[in-house]
Length: 407
Image (cartoon, rainbow, N blue to C red; front, side, top):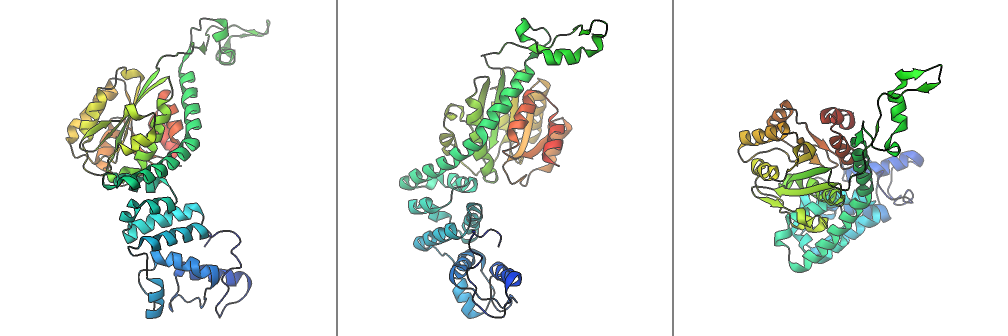
């Protein structure tokens, strides 16, 4: 298993029927992958650290097969015992890197129905925090006891702060650069505002060889930096259960964009109801605990609300983050999107804002939106800052998606 910690190549060399060197290591890895039992064909036994790693894996992934003795040893699972789960969480953090731990935690929650154990504070203190775990906790928010809620908030804050460290600087740089580029003017008011490099390149056809100079018939310069709002950004986020990771990332990006004075950022979440969380964007953790994952979906109702937030259509970017399964009035939803684009709003539909790619989504609605010039695609968090820059500069978003996301 390539994910095991360093320094373990010499652990667990028990058993018979093996040869030395590379073949020995290959058999050991296959034994850990296959899980043992008479049918695995490796003839490889485990002891020491390898046996403990094997038991940690078996608690989640070995739910059938093997002889009676092996099955009794390997299929005890985690059951509903909090102490047993706590020991298992400690074991996997000892034996595997954090990225593997996160996958194993997620699989344990899904396969062994351990969700309710996350309501216990000691469990929350033992897990490895990640975006998917945050999504699970948000779904449990309404049934979470007060003591567990404080532990959950601490875990969510750790994840949010890490995402902000990873994404905030890149987002601010991309957005600021795009705003500066979009503010170029052909009528600079001062010599200091002239972009000489671009002006010279634009006027090379006016070069006079005998005078060794360029006669600028067209000036390109910088508009004076504006302190007022230059763009309105409305993030409209579907909070159905399948969109959990997108909700987490949207809250972080919403907070980053809201911190920029040149933008007026709104964040709206919806299921069959619509909730405006804009006044909480100073703290994305508060935003997340203001969501309610699950339930139905009324995209049309959410878009109707967001239309009322747009005051300057030609300077506005509306980003709908949804799998497009509409429980409301589909034709009205499409008419509203068409009306926004005709008014000059830059409309973008993200099927997901996460690292996993597009979830199941309504292909018919996606195709209908594409037909009216509104692209619908999944976007990774790392690509989102550049997507915002492209939207601010009013580049062709379909071409941007083709170039950046489908290579």
